Length: 233
Image (cartoon, rainbow, N blue to C red; front, top):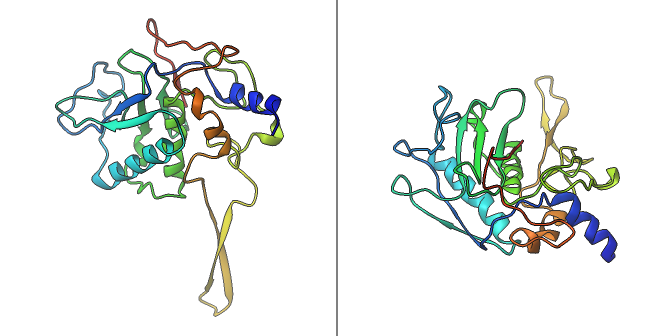
């Protein structure tokens, strides 16, 4: 990949919204946690992660931490809360979740998962685990490669826009199934195709690793400080 292609990848994934420090705190809400805004947390569908789901969330954070310049560190709730938080609510529509871009507003860095995922195990390779990776990408300031967002209007060419290249894509990669063979009730050999999703940020994601705290001049860094916090599905 030449420098022009590298620039294209960075511009197509970087929203321009960034954290102003390389140390990013996170916390997992508990039953005693409070929120500085109320829309999601006051909904009847609100809920917190189980112990198993919390472990999976920490694993996805570590997956990002392994490849980016920024570092995550945990704060214990309910005594305090981190910049990045995750909980369940009614997301609305068909989307499985959304996250707020980096911001010093209360919403900045928060991830809201649809309550339909409350029973999900979030195991690596599953769709639910992929959703956590995807939403954390937004938390770090990455956008969808197929649309303009934040301060960037650059789009990724269609041949590169799939989940094989970046977890920020909506387009599923080809041949992403494993075949599970078994003997059916008739005694015949049969199989079922099981979809497999990324369990770590893909190479285009970590290509942007240096720019998640500081952005190059062509995509000026900006932090949302006033008005409406920016959320992304």
